[in-house]
Image 1 (cartoon, rainbow, N blue to C red):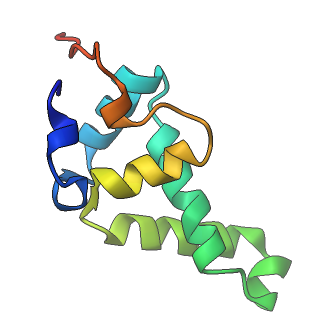
Image 2 (image 1 turned 180 degrees about the vertical axis):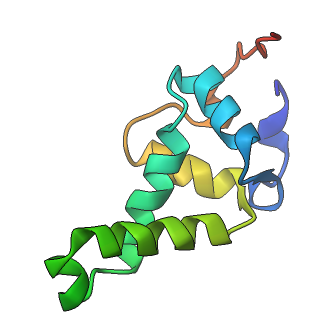
Length: 101
């Protein structure tokens, strides 16, 4: 992790599975930071239809399906999402040490 800034983060991917939530927990202390940022972006990219505005549960289901459909996310994409919210991004963390259970 110490030399990650030397790599093209557009081409390093993190699987959309429990690893993503684990990394979020270790970096931010909150398991869903990346998930919420991604879903927030999906809501901007795919606005609710009239029917979904009338039944917000339908819209939440649509966003969940879109989120689950993506197999992985580049570190650069994740960094852009959390950086926009004022969080640390992966290359900015110099003293990151994985927590082993």
